[in-house]
Every structure is written in C-alpha cells, then in structure tokens.
Length: 237
Image (cartoon, rainbow, N blue to C red):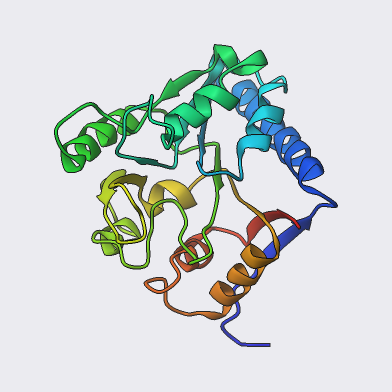
C-alpha cells in the first residue's frame, strides 16, 4: 500500500435509493442531537445531480426543523430562479415536507460581481452559530469538491488551512459560471463531515485522490488531509 494513502471510512450501499435513505437518517439523527444539545443545528449541503434523491428523503425525516438552519457548501453566481442554481435545488427538493420549517441562508447575493457577493455571503455565514453540525460534500470526476477546482483562480485561498474568510469566489475554465464557496476551515471543522458520491467513476476518482499528494491537482485531497478523522464516504454504484 502507498505510504501516503489517505484513510477513509467507506459506507457502501446496495443501490442509490438505499444510499439516499441511509444518509438522510444519519443526517437527521445528528441534527436532532444538535438541537437537543444546544437548541439549534446548522448544516451545509452541496449541489449537483447527486443529492436530489438524498434531499427528498431528508425532507421527510423528523429533525426539529424549526431549529435548523440550512446553508450551501458552494453556489453558482446565478439567481435562485436559474435552473443551475443550488439555491433552487434546495428549495425544490429539500425545503418541503417536514423540512419546510427550516431556515435557509443562501450564498448568492444580488450584487454586481462575484467578489462583492462573496464578501456579503461571508458576513452572513460568520453570523451563524458555527461550526457546522453537518457538512455533506460531493465530488466531481476531476477531484473537485465544494468549488475547489484544480485550476481555480482562488484555489490556494480556498484550501488554506489558515483561511480567515468563510466564503471566497472561484472562477475556473471547467466551472462554467463564477462560483461562491465555503473555505476549507469551515468545512473540516464540522461535527459530522460526509462525502456523498455515486458510480464507479467517482469511486475511482476518490482512489486516485487518496494516492495523489497534491491538493492543487485533486482538491478533495485537501479535505482528506485536514479532516479531523478519516472521511466518511457514502457510496453506491
């Protein structure tokens, strides 16, 4: 085995439906526990196609939602009505059923440019009762997570373990729109940090990242290196 292989805890599920249900139960239990301990809970979730089924399942779980605040790990610099908006994804698939009473804090801000939006979003995140109780990450086939893109213009700032900004902007050739993303310290300090991926290609990508020592090439490696414990990975084919 490569001496630099980063450890993970792989939770393999039989299919994607079971994966979503298992993850939803786990997250809801952690949110209930947080509310029980301190009267409120804070979760950051990711966008993309993968979490839709998970969001639907989570919306049906009991989690004392009136005491829960939902945020995004990252967001495209597009308004909520845009079909590529992660805000829209959460509103459509999560903020309903039992979860309709949760609060939502968006990253997108209706200002002229993405850097101004990042500054405003950082202020909103900083006002929350951090750290996050739960952060659920996704991952692209290029090894990016959040909006930590390998060729991102602010990647170094985003994955800096000493970053003081909670939100930075990100632009990259493969990102499409400009992005807003939480920075590494606000992700790895979560009480429960999870990676939700599906398909053989994503599992192979994770394997490469565990052997790749450079977060600049496969940014998920920054999470693997800085997480307080081996990353919990929930996966199905």
